[in-house]
Length: 215
Image 1 (cartoon, rainbow, N blue to C red):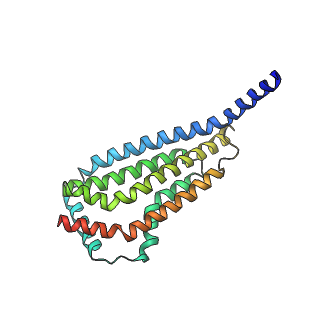
Image 2: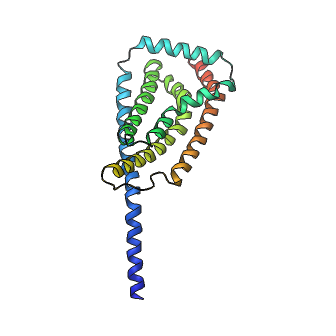
Image 3: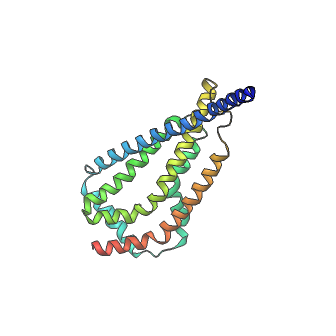
C-alpha cells in the first residue's frame, strides 16, 4: 500500500511539473500583454491632447456625415471583419514564430494606443457628448474584440516562448500547439464575426442617433 501511494505521489508531481510551466507562462504572458496594453492606452490618451483640433474635427465631421447618410449594407461585412480582426490575425501569425515573444506584447501596446487615442480625441473635441459618441463608434465592438485579442495574444505568447525555449535551451513544450490553441482560435474567430455583424448592421444606426443628438 505504501509503495502504491509513493508511486502515486511521484506521478502526481510529474504531472504538476508538466502543467505548471505552461500555466505559469500563460499568466506571465497575460501580465506582460496587459501591462503593455495599459501603457499604450496611457500614451494614447496623453497623445490625443497634443493631436490638434483641426485634423480631428475634419475627420470626425466627415465620418459622421458618411455614417448618417450611407445606407446599411451587408456588402461591407468583410471589410469590417478585416478591420476588426487585423490585430487578432497578426497575433495568431506571431504565435507561429519565436519572435512573437517580443512582438505580441508590442502589438497589445499598439492596440491600446490607437484605441484610447481615438476615444480621447473624440472626447477632447466634443466634450461630454464625445463619451456617447466614442461608445457608439468603438464601445460595442471593443467589448467583444478586446477580450479576444487578449486570449489570442496570451496563447501566441505562450507558444512563441515554447518555440524559443525549444530552439535555445530545449526546455520548451514538445507540443506548443495543442487542441486548446485551435479551439480558442476558432471560438475567437466566431466572436469576431459576430462583432463584425454588429458593427455592420447596428453600429451605423447607433452612431446616427448619437450624431443627431450632438448636432
